[in-house]
Image (cartoon, rainbow, N blue to C red):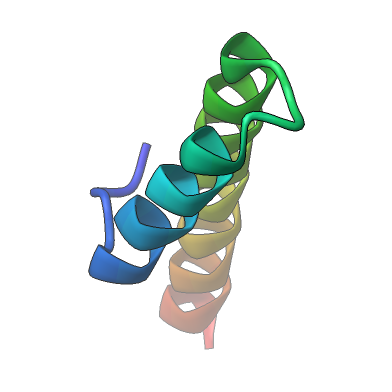
Length: 51
């Protein structure tokens, strides 16, 4: 997973404070998002190295 960004921390804090969405869902979404970004970054670097 990629590291936490300041913006990601702010977004999560705001969503948790609003209490409209269950906390588990917010944290699971953030985890999925960061894992997806890490996979995209790996694929990008792999393609860049092949050129």
